[in-house]
Length: 295
Image (cartoon, rainbow, N blue to C red; front, top):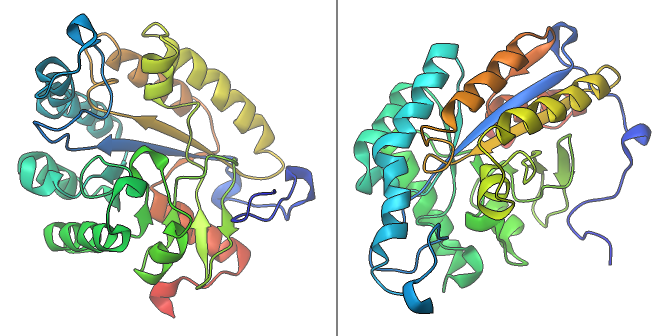
C-alpha cells in the first residue's frame, strides 16, 4: 500500500517553495545526544562480543558512547560555536539528569531541543508509548523552560499510533520519515503535523558504522549532497539535513571533515542554516499553515 501518513507528490508537481533573500537551500544540523543506560543492552556496538557471547555490562561499547558525552560533544560544540551555527538537538530527556553539564551547555548556547525518547530505546519496545512521550516532553520543558516542538523517535522508530499521539501531546514536527527533501504535512487524526527532511544518507551511523567508510566520507558525501540540492533549490527550496552523534563524528580523526564541510557550504551564497523550529515556521508561513502555538 502507499504511505498512509503522506500523500504522494512528485517534486515537479508541487507549489514552489521560496526562501528569504533569494536563498536556495536550508542546511539543518542535527546533533543526536543520548543516554545509554549502563547495565542494559547497548543501542549499537563498535566491538563484537568476545567469543560471540553478549555481556552485560558491555563495558567497551558503553564506554565508546560515553566518550562522546565526555569528549566528542565538546569537540563538535567548538566547531559550531566558532562558526556561529545553532544546532537542533535530538535529546534523550534523561540526559538532563545523567549529563547535566552537557544539557546546560546546549541551553546556554540557545540551541533548539527536540524530543528523542526518554532513553535510547525504540517506542515500539515501550510498554506505554504515550507515557514515555509525556515524560520526555515534561523533562525537557522542566530543564530548558520550553516544551519541545519537534520529535525524533529513538532509532526513527514509531508505532502505528505515534504521529497521532505526538499531535495530541503538542508536538508540531517529526523527523522519523526520511522520504523527502522538502517538508510536508502528514496525515494524522488530530491536525497539522509536519514532517521535516531528516536523513539516513548524511548520517554518521550508516556512513561509518554500517557502510564502514573512511573518515573523509562526511565531507566528500556532504559536498556532493549539497551540490545537487543547491542546484535543485534554484527552482524550489530544498532542505539538507546533516545528522551526527558525539561518539562518532566527535572522534579526533573525523571532526576536521565536519569542519571542512561547513567551510564548503559557507563558500556559497543563498544558504541558510536554520534549526528545526525555524524551518517549521517558514514552511507554515509559506503554505498557509497555522502553527498550533498561535491557535
